[in-house]
Length: 174
Image (spheres, rainbow, N blue to C red):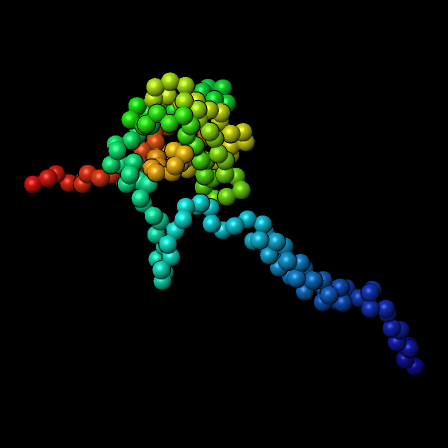
């Protein structure tokens, strides 16, 4: 004589939990991925760009204006990490300049500093707090007519700011 079969409840069968939890884990991972993607924009570069077909170009009027004027600057970061001094003799004596700290990958980490003129060819300002990683530096006058660019990688010292383009050709004239 054969023993009667006993049925066990579904929640005591390990295979039932596997069938339920694997798809649930995939759905939760998908929702988490969507939240991560929506949390930060994918475009870290604040410049206005022109898109045509599959090409993307940035306007260069401000860079060419700075190159034509022969503008360059030195940004000296103090050892205390809180103050900075800008030296630029060719820049018009604007009472204030703006320095944009553009994070390499995350737009929400971008910062901005105001530099006030303290003497001929010299401006001072505060270094933004909480700088982490690499930053592209953009120095602009109040009217935005020119732009100087540089790079900050977390080290103190002197940073050269220069136009993105040169108006003189890299080859010798004939």
